[in-house]
Length: 520
Image 1: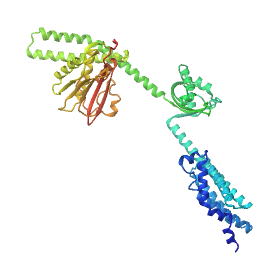
Image 2 (image 1 turned 30 degrees about the horizontal axis):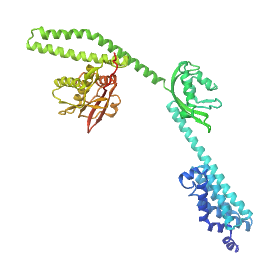
Image 3 (image 1 turned 90 degrees about the horizontal axis):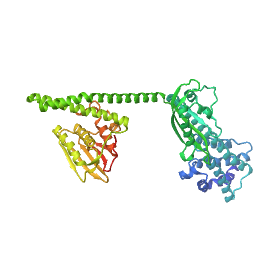
Image 4 (image 1 turned 30 degrees about the vertical axis):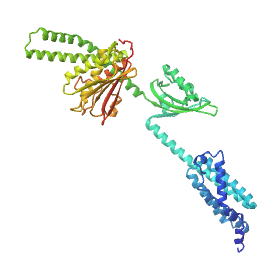
C-alpha cells in the first residue's frame, strides 16, 4: 500500500492532468476546424464545451484507478465508480437534448487529442490503460447516443400525441404521399371526407377518382406544379370530392408541401385536409341572397320611377301655374324636395344594380373643367348645409375628360359624408390639385377617426355607422361612398382614405385626365 503514492505522481494519469489546459485548447481547435461540425461553428464554441472539462477529470480518474487496480489485483471498485460517473455525465448531457451527431463527433475528437497528447509528451500508456481510455470514451459515446435517442423518441411521441389531439379537435385530416412509389397514406379523417373505408388500400389513382370530375384537371395540375423545385413545393387548393362509397359531395381545403432530394426530384408530399362544405354552402347562400336583393331592388327602382316622375311633374306644374297661396306653395315645395330625394335614392339603387351585374357604373366622358364641375356640386351643398362651412381650394388646370354628372355625384357624396361626420363648428375642406397626369380631389373633415376594422369595408355597399355612432343625415342607405368609389373606378381612378384622431379624415379621389372609353 505504501508504494501507491510515488506511482500515482509519475503515472500517465497524473502527467495528463498536468496537460489539461493544452488538451482542452487542442480539442476546441480540432472541433471548430472540423468542416462537419456545423453546429459548433455556428455557435463559435463546441457543443460539449461545458461538459468536457468534467469528463476529462472523470477519465483521468479512471486511468488512475486502472493503474491501482492493476497493481492491487482485483481492487477495481474505484475504476467502476469512475466509469459510472462518466456514464452518468453522458446521460446528463443526453437528457439536455444535445445534438447526437455533434456530441459523438466531439467525443471522438477528445479521444484523438488525448492520444496525440500522450505521444507529444512521451507518455506511455499500458495495455490496461489504453483499454480503459477507449472503453471510457466509448461508454460515454454509447450512453450519450442511447440517452439522446430516448429523449428524442419521447419528444417525438409527445409531439405526435399533441398533433393527434389538435387534428382531431380541428377536424383536420393528415396525408402522406410517396411520390416515388405512388404509395399514399390517409388517416381516418382523410378517409372519412373521401368516403373511403378503413379496409380500402389507397393510392394516387384512388385519390384522383374521388375528385369531382369538374375539378380533377385543376387538382392534378396543382399537384404537378408542386413537384417543381422552383415552386418551393407548395400545394394549396380547394376543390370538391365525391365520396367513393356514400357519393356525398364535399368541399375540402388541402394544404401540403413536397420534399426534394439532392438532385431536385420530388420524393415525398405531406399535408392536411379540412372539410369546408359548411362554409362553402354558407357562401353560396349568401351570394344568392345578395343577387336576389340586387335584382329585387333593381326591379323595384324601375317600378318606382314612373309614379315618382308623375309626382315631380305635378309638383312642378302646381308651382308654376297653380296660383297657390304662400302656405300651399311651401307644401308643394316640400313635395318636390321629397320627390327629388326619392329620385336620387332610386338612382343610387339602380347604380348598385348596374355595378353588380354590369361590372361598373356607366359613364359618358366629355371634355370639361373639373374645377367648374366640383364648384357647382359644392354650391348646391352649401345651400342645403348652411350650418357647416364648406371651403374649396383649387390649384392648376381642371381640364380633362370627365362625365360631369357622375363626377358631381361623386363629389356630392364625398362632401356630404364629410359634413355628416364633421365636428360641430368645424369646416369641411375641399382641395383640387394636379399630380402628373391625374387630378386629385381631397375632402377633409375634423371629426372622430374611422375605426380600423371599418376601413376594410368602407367602400362596400350598405355600409353605415354602427349603433352608437353618428349616422348620415342624407339618404341613409350606406351607398354614398360605394357609388363615389365606383364612379372614380369607372373613370380609371380610385379613392383612398386616411383617418387619424389627431388629423381628422381625408378622402382622396384620383381621376386621370386622359380619355376614358364611355361605359354604358
